Image (cartoon, rainbow, N blue to C red):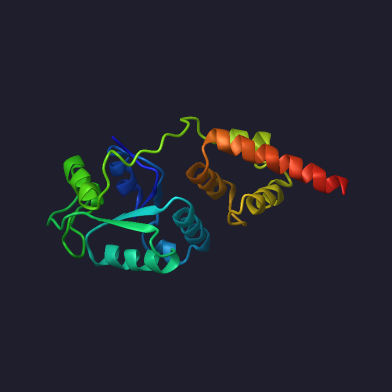
Length: 204
């Protein structure tokens, strides 16, 4: 298992499931070409690229190349590491026929092929970032009034501004963003500072 500090971007949920058996990292999906219309997801990926750097692993077909090109346009320079899986003809077990280009996708790759592709891009087990195993959860957000309340959306936006994160995110997107950028202890400290700041502003 390779533990990475960067956020990994893949195309779909089956790609994510495949990678979760090889790497320990935050993995986000573009949901294919849906990313072209999803401003919220694009803003999140741009932020993560700026804060942590991203690793892009797509299928080795024309669709994967198009997605890489799009991500290159929305992310700052030198924040993307591209990992290229080999072009192997075939189809995944769950599919009735091969893809348009006839190549196996990321979900069809063996662990050995994925590890080799990572190594060829300079990514090995040395890319380790030790973080708390305790995740930020919806229950925690609820306890802070950031989920499930009448003013939760307003409070999330206020906290997002304080943390210099994108505003207007849904609760689920906000949770994904927080877990990608902060570990549990860092988030608790950040919320404490935010709460103190709000109290000070209320006194003025």
